[in-house]
Each structure stands twice: as C-alpha cells, then as structure tokens.
Amino acid sequence: MAASKPMWKCGGCGRSFANRNQPHFCGRHTLREHLRGRTPELLKIFRAFVKMARGCGRVRILPEKTRIAFQERMSFAAVSFRRDGLNGHLVLASRVEHPHFVKIETISLRNHVHHFRLRSIDQLDSEFARLMREAYRVGRQLHLRTRTAGSAYS
Image (cartoon, rainbow, N blue to C red; front, side, top):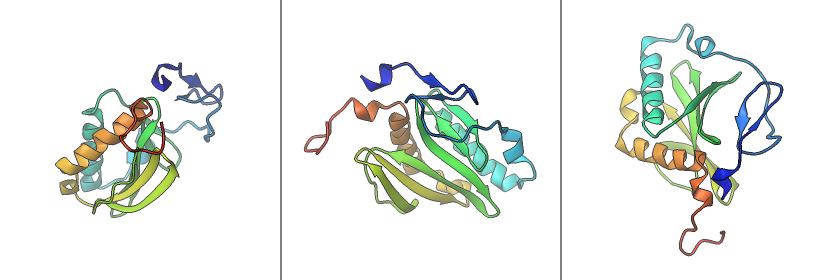
C-alpha cells in the first residue's frame, strides 16, 4: 500500500517526501520569518488554523519561502500571509464545491487543490474542520487505499 512506503529525504534541505526525488525548492526558512510583523488578528487566524490541522493527527509544519506547508506523508494544506488575511489551499481527493473555496485546480484524478481566503477566525467553522480532516486523509495517502463506488480509478 502506498502509505507504507518509506519516506524519501532530500539530501539538500532534509525535507521528507512520500515520493523519491520529489520536485521542490530546497531552502531553510523559519516560522518566525513568516510571523514577524503580523497583526494580532492574522496571528489569531493562523494559530486557529494550526490548531485545527494538529487536531487531525501528526502534522509537520514546514515554513517555505512563500508559504507554510502542512504535511503528514505529503502536503495536504498550505497558507501564506496577506495584508488582509491568509490565502491557502487544502488538497482533497475529489472536487468539493463550497463557498469556502475561491478556486479549485485538478492536479490528478485524486488530487484537487481547493484554494481559500481566510479573513476571519469565524471562517474556521465545523465545515472547514471537516474539509481539513478530508485533506489530512489525503496527506496520509489514505485516499489511495480505498476505491469510491463508481469511481473511474482504483
């Protein structure tokens, strides 16, 4: 099964990936860099997002140059700070039309990037938490183990 494969570690930056030679930009960035100078309201939204992600299970928080990724075996979410909120995405196994999402990109049959904008902590509601849990399953690659009835893929 896909989730039982050992993780591959980049020799350049030390980041672990579910797939060997995963394309990425090596770099060493800190969470402090991303948090520096942010308003109390933005920090409150970010901390609530982190708490929600961690509520799903084990999560690696990976500060990158332009975003902060959230990873289990693979990245399932990411956020970046903007002046008026957080922009980010959740990776889901299927397309989910929902007011939380401003854009959806289909990467493959079982990987759909759902973009969102968080301008208030109130947007991190129970429905967003449910979608985060679904994204976390993708991060664990559990969506690769199951077959949805009537699906075109195995």
